[in-house]
Image 1: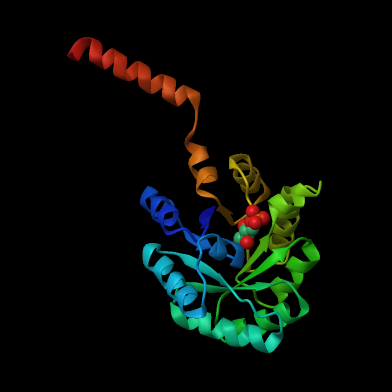
Image 2: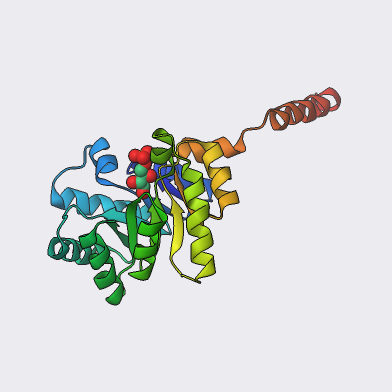
Length: 218
Ligand code: E4P
């Protein structure tokens, strides 16, 4: 299971990278806006800055919604850095763009996936990753993790190479549920990743070890 961090915040990306378990980064236009990154050149520079912090894949999302615009933007983003994966929404134009970009050996992340049918089309078009949105499905009373399991089963059955990138992860339990469901990657807020560390017995055990050491050594 790979961990990506789902943010455009450079401090959080550095913190996750320093932890030594980070495999990549996902961004989207909302996450870029949250960091106040605006203007085409600043946005491109920010992607390069992210690539210079992490070792793995960095998803950069196209803004265009038409096929020609998507492939033009996708080629520009891919040229920024070898770690860039072009993120394309799962629309009719998006699927065509994924097909075109993969034929040019440009890696893609097909995003805004909410059904196994959408994931199937993206995989057939040659997407490197599909991003089903777990939290947003949970928000409307549908089981987001169930969709991860359905897509993982389908990809295994048909031996698709496309990886299942569980997105819209909101908390630590989502990560553990996605592991069981067979996700290849989870893209998470930093708090969900560090949440995996927490256990009261670890804290209690460490306290006891130190108390016993100090009894004899102080
Ligand atoms: C990442 O690829 C997605 O854009 C992101 O996980 C969406 O998360 P949200 O539903 O919390 O906005």
